[in-house]
Image 1 (cartoon, rainbow, N blue to C red):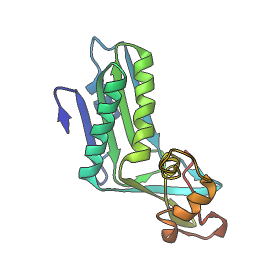
Image 2 (cartoon, rainbow, N blue to C red):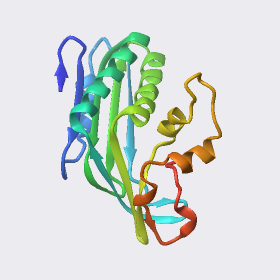
Image 3 (spheres, rainbow, N blue to C red):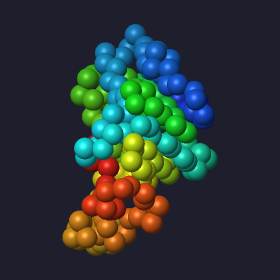
Length: 190
């Protein structure tokens, strides 16, 4: 999805389509941009001592695109940004491959750096993209700590006991299948 007025490129990539890092970086490149900041989230080979085989992503794509657009708008309202590109893969993402990529360009580095961090943090906290970690000994749906932090806040903004809330409120607890019982309630700590 591309909006000429705001210079945003948002793509949810289906199947085995790899993230073309050069494409998204080139999209935000411009002579007026003195800084380009990127974030590349890749599948690592271990988590909490377990061997990771791959990550699998699912999404509600129309809502995911709308939410990423809203995050872009919030970033633009806060920092002086030239262009933003966001790509997220769906399906299986093997170890070493990129699952999410964000590029932000701005006249000054502070705006680009701050906006890029904001973009990935908000994406993980609010966008309806779900991740399953597949291990050599099982698999588990994961919730991002940014999402859990938001859910653990009371309406008045007071934090509640996050460790207990995490295990009690985890949406996918029943979908876990890992041979080590101590991992039944996990949060992604990337």
